[in-house]
Image 1 (cartoon, rainbow, N blue to C red):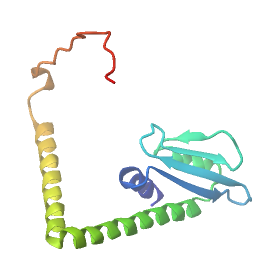
Image 2: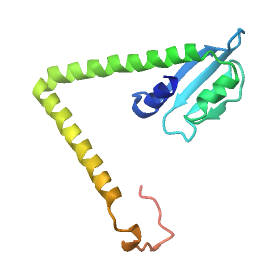
Image 3: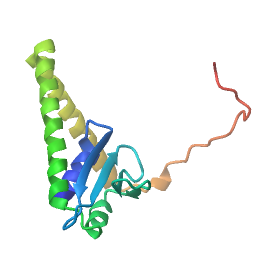
Image 4: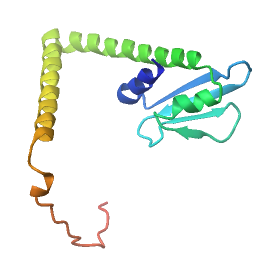
Length: 153
């Protein structure tokens, strides 16, 4: 379940950064864990009061924390709390938008978005099933026209 929650945070978090403090099992040592959107290694962790962060990818973080004997049950509860907090915030946004724009407009937006997503999925599926090799398409030709361009002010 922890892996699924990490994937959820990575794909759907409203926040750009999230932070937890979690104990090491069988000791009083505490670790800081931070998630940052749009980073190559979005996770980082360190013992409290340490200066240096250790970075980890979504695939590495559980293994790294396990090696440090981090209380993963407590960490999972913290992630679950963040997800639930964001769900509550999203629900509040939906309710406020319905009162502002009307239920029909919101329901239509949801339906239109779902139709658009289905169209994208079907298009990708059709393209990946295509029997034409990608080499049949000519590659675009790019050429540097001017190398001393100055930024606009």
